[in-house]
Amino acid sequence: MEIGFEMANLARHMVVVVAVDDDFRVRESIESLLESAGYAPQLFSTAEEFLKSGTLAVAACVITDVRMPGMDGIELQRRIRLERPTLPVIFISAHDNAETRQLALKEGAVSFLDKPFNAEDLRGKIHVAITTAQN
Image 1 (cartoon, helix red, strand yellow):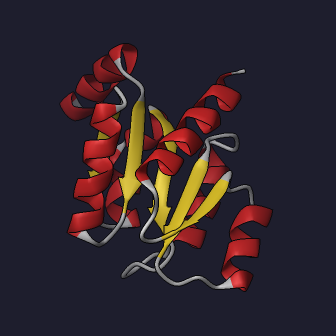
Image 2: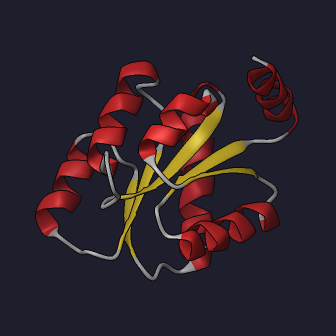
């Protein structure tokens, strides 16, 4: 309960952006990018960990990998849509698959980037996603 309170306080002061990726180096890179852009990063190594954390309630944007152990990014997006239908989801993937890309976008993803991604491109996509969602 206390963690949720702390997250709610954090959300009042900073925009929370979530990154879900099983690769530590990718999470670390995204964390650095988000901090430099003035966002409050919340990082998770699995979709299940993110969904159990309570962070979904305060997130302004979710960045997720497609392929992860356990629940994949597509299923994560479906679960997000049940609770927060307009929350922007950005996919990043090392496995460029046209079918997966089309499915993610069809189901509401705002963007789908290939790994390695360009940091400035991702930062721009996050900014546009959050700004658009707030209007």
